[in-house]
Length: 278
Image 1 (cartoon, rainbow, N blue to C red):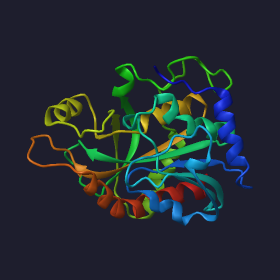
Image 2 (image 1 turned 90 degrees about the horizontal axis):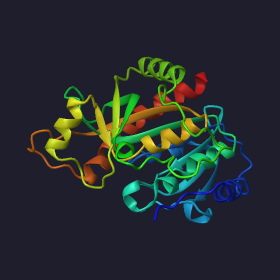
Image 3 (image 1 turned 180 degrees about the horizontal axis):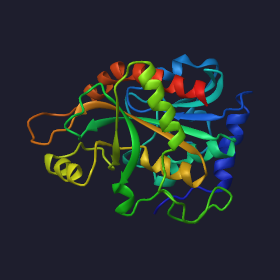
């Protein structure tokens, strides 16, 4: 049976966060595999373990620290999810997106999402950063949309528009920040699959044919819920491995984590530039 999160459960978690910090964050972050180091830059930080928050799903994956870091970054009050939870860990879509709804109830205005992704576009190489300009919701198309179940009217409309999932102004600021830091910023469409198995060569050839530039196992459900709630969204993918379109290589989670060490400094410079500008 699918578990649908209620407004009461969301508010219980939000109240628990409020009780553990005096900060009033404006910008939320969700950090992907191997990208946790950005949270270490947060100043005047309060740290809260996911396990200490009621109804909050707990991350079980290596490379996801499983805590909130709330403080200041580039003069902005931020709330950083150091690690995320995934559909493949056994949670419902409603459960894995509860943190985004908590952000809404805490008064946040923006959500910056990052992930480690496989580069499907043949021009992409490991270590690249891709600005997500749109997404392909393969999991949702197959019947697992995070907005299924009773709509919570206090959070957003029954049928939210997704024509501009990623905010034009935030994307412009990201391009400027990348240019100022001499970072090559790729752009493209991110496709979300359920995982946890990596894609077969046939999967990847299909995804490339329909316009995918990078593929991963997260992000899109969070973005859908953020847009439902009226949050402005910026998405960045760290290209951690080159997609195996011909079956000649093996993809591992270890290489994804390792690539994060190269990618994180680039994403941090871009994000800092955007924060200064907003």
